[in-house]
Length: 313
Image (tube, rainbow, N blue to C red; front, top):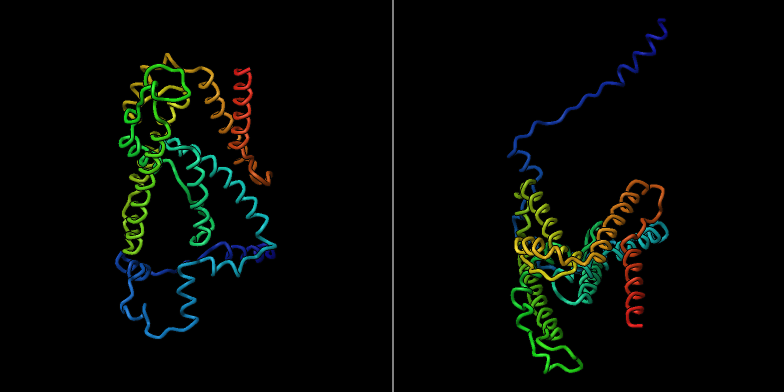
């Protein structure tokens, strides 16, 4: 009994922790942890220049020179190839979908999915980020494009169109798409200039003052906006871009819904959600996530191809 009591004494001592830390005030914590700007500008731009210092400046602009020599090919290459292929497939499909939100030809969605990743390969500093277009920006650019280049500005008389037997007015799709691409490219270039200026001035500190409810509300509103913008594609009829008018015209034209497109859209959503849940639950057992988006696109494209051949035959 005494031996048991002696054996229990060390265990009782190990089950207690003593934590000692300084007591901070808000001002003291910020003084110790917040990054302060350098006091002396000459320290940033020394008068003397050497090969080592010049190489350090180049590495600050091209981080690939920092991490590529230390890359462990045997340990990381296979995993990076798998993650790169899976992420690239999803980014490709997202680029095609986001091009529809911007109201430009889908080929430009592929450009927007490829070139940002290629640029970030040389200039990026985080291996966890997959850069590219995302819904909120696509919707904002699309609103500008549709307001400046609506379909009504490109109506032509069918008598002036070659190779058509349709009477009435037609839309000059080639001129419309060229104008919309020009508007989207100009807007993107101007926003890029502003981002460079903000980066030089280090305006990013403003993000610290964005409250969580603000960010959560913005994300929820963006998700709802994307959902509403896809109704015209799922229901297969033309409606305007603005959210309230979209909802009104959706209920007004609900009787003209294409049932086949509606069923296919809902079935696609259900299948993608189920497979994503499977990927999350069995991610430790499945070496590669199931690329359900790619599979659905391939199957749907093949079905449309067969249906079009049977229609023409």
